[in-house]
Amino acid sequence: MKKKFLLVILFLLTALVYYSCSVKCGCTTYCSMFCEQKYKFVMKDTLDQTLVEGIMFFETADDNTFQGKYNFTKTYNEFPGISTMQGILEGKYSTTLKKGTINTNPGIADYNIFIDFKILTKQLKGTFYLSTMTGIKYKGNFFAELIETK
Image (cartoon, helix red, strand yellow):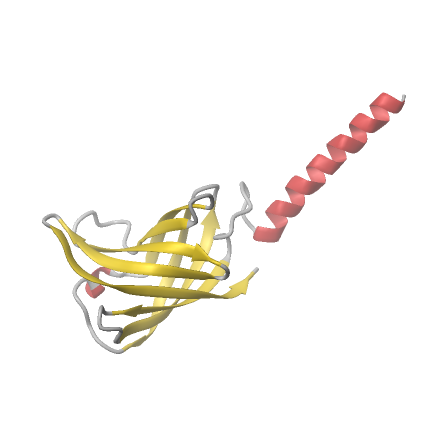
């Protein structure tokens, strides 16, 4: 009888932990640092002049990928590749390596802006670059700060 009771308790605790994780982050499969997170971001050129500011919202995630949306709240200067940035993003990350990559237009393989970043406490910091069939054509700096979590 004690053995059955302990098995039931163990099962209930496991189910509770799994359920609380999926409810907390709103994702059905995995609790991720990129699940339902909103970041304020800035993209700057190599001379540290601000090009754009905006908001990124990571909507869904699993153990190493995420999807979401972004929009520009202010554009200071146009730059090569900005026209390809249509508001949808996909990315990959590694919590063990504390880094990741964002594809700012998953529907296009050529002439696209990618962001490589390091994962810091409530921040993402790295570089963005315009990738073309002939190589990287433009680079700049990227910084994002967590402003909301659900």
